[in-house]
Image 1: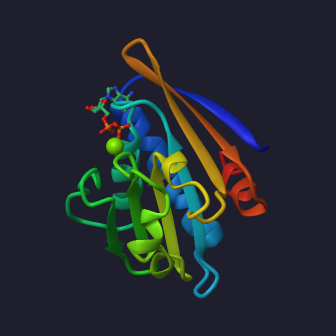
Image 2: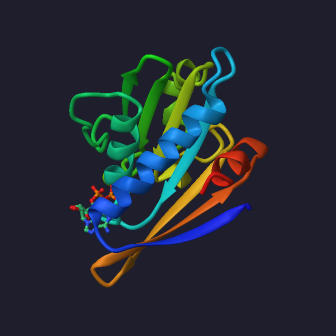
Length: 159
Ligand code: ADP
Ligand code: MG
């Protein structure tokens, strides 16, 4: 399976999907030295990209808050098996700014990249394994997950 669309009646449903995806990612990618995963998050303001990221990061073992990286561009989390780098590139004026902020330092092994507004960083982010698009459906949401790599497909196959 390379794509799946889910209907999410409320925030709890979205957080549950985030947790499932985090567990699948850990199962499939979580071998020491072999762990690298990139997830692009699309959707309008308020769609739920940060909410999804919070659920994902907390499921991987982060105990504290997950702050929106709206102003900092990136928030990083040191977890037992991973470094998670959560980007929000909404305010990026030029993708080249990622070069100046040292994007390469974020691209090593044992890392997961979650990127909101990845289209603003085109050319400077790693290729995405999974693309997630969240759309408004009245007060609920629909979410489409698409795999773009073999690793992404293996993760989505658990859904
Ligand atoms: P984004 O990062 O995409 O701009 P946020 O995650 O910051 O969006 O905000 C999403 C908002 O929508 C939150 O206030 C959340 O409570 C609300 N919300 C309502 N229904 C849902 C749903 N089904 N899934 C996710 N968020 C929802
Ligand atoms: Mg956000």
